[in-house]
Image (cartoon, rainbow, N blue to C red; front, side, top):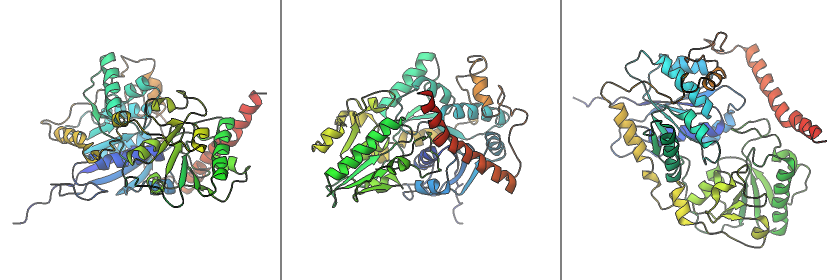
Length: 448
């Protein structure tokens, strides 16, 4: 008789922005039981997991172009409210759930899921974590993520810090699991291209002032003029009208319209890995792209022109050996990364990247095989431990203190009709107009 076909593992990913969809989908691929959806079957695996994507409705819901850029194909993909997602988790059965959300969103879902699964003998393994470098709100973000079965740390340094925070407040730290950034990869840098290519990886909210963003843009254009034999690229996260994880009030596309850049200066979009394929020097203020670049051993610079400050996030790179200014770059300086620092950041440029997710996969397999199923979700924050904080977080997602939907919560049983879709698009457009045009004007008026 033919061997029975093994059960196809089912994975759900809930994300609230393009970056978090990228992290969540790629993380699901790396840690899923069974073969990789990207790299082909893993050894001993027979069944390809099924991936269902859920996009949390909001200001940063990814556009089709942004989803396409990630490169991971979901078996299904739909936009939902928090309450609609919880309903889906009540009705459907999954093996693994990845919450790729901001901290408050994770906390709300943990409480909502705890309610919808309270009478179930089996539930998915719940995983969450961070998109990239954790350089602010460490305790706040971590405690909002507490309660998931696995809280992924992208590096050894983060794993140590995460456990210290949980231990320090008396929370169970066993969920902390060291992995690496899921979007690292690509061929190692082997030498200069023709033409030599300099890439500035822009960030939506760092820096946030017109003065600082204009300064960085002017320096990049000046570098292009100084080196006409080079190709100088401004790598942008989103096109006009699109939103990302962070609000971008002053898009570089608009700022560059006031300049007359040389022919060797260009704006580029697309997958960061593809851009790195032709990069000889990656420059940024504090983008996670720096870690992608270091992983591939591409010469990488974290700028000090605006200072080394927590608000910029470049303080995270103290000790990296990558800190430098535009003046130094114009003069030909090329930094040498500190290998010990790089090793602690989950960059694993030593070739051990493929094994970086083994511990998470093994832990998930054990949880799925746990006799009697998994215990109820148990977040650190409860109406007892945080009665003045938790209700507000849950209410933002239309949930009550016990995780039940509040009266009037948006949770339609069917897809929105044409009128509702038009109204929603208009509301998003108005929001983006307010963020990118009205808010800066009001801010300038306030500075008069």
